Length: 261
Image (cartoon, rainbow, N blue to C red; front, side):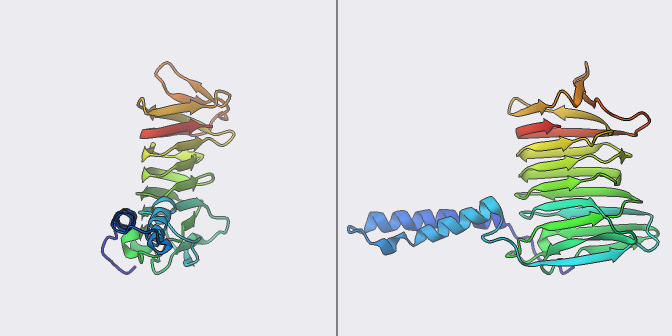
């Protein structure tokens, strides 16, 4: 993967918005007559706001497909530092591959192997700053995964059904997180968001224990038909099958809501 300097795109977006407002005020305050041409700074405001709120101006068309065969790999770790890019992950349907999906232009996942453990890294800093295609990946089902996914303005959507998770940490700055729990997780899964909602879904038959570290500005909404609240404040799935491995999830946030369903 080609290395590039960190892009601070959200700062650039704020700068565009601020510059547009300043130029617009300057035009109207210094000119006595109304001229429609003085409205052109609004374009900067709109473009900056779109990049800031959506991550792009138009739907991303600069994605590239990829696939990596499994070989002799017995365990894998995926680290994603997505910045303003949305991230989605699910289980692979096709056997024989380690990972497949799409990535933003010119940012193929970096791969390194130590014995039978593979490390994959997808980094926003290595992506051209005008590339906003979503990162979508599918992961092999029959080996344990370590997942470390973070965004600053993007959203995270992980459907981990059918996957074996060794450890997972999901974090967003400004953005929502959606997690469909796996049937098996060797260590607790950590999910946290500074500003945004977190939605945790337990598949039918799954056994899940969820601990929510909330504040007065981070509220919890629970489907009581799916979860039972314990005396210690944890939420246990009601319809877990006998003998199903227990998956533990720790949820925390600053501003927003947690939804358990």
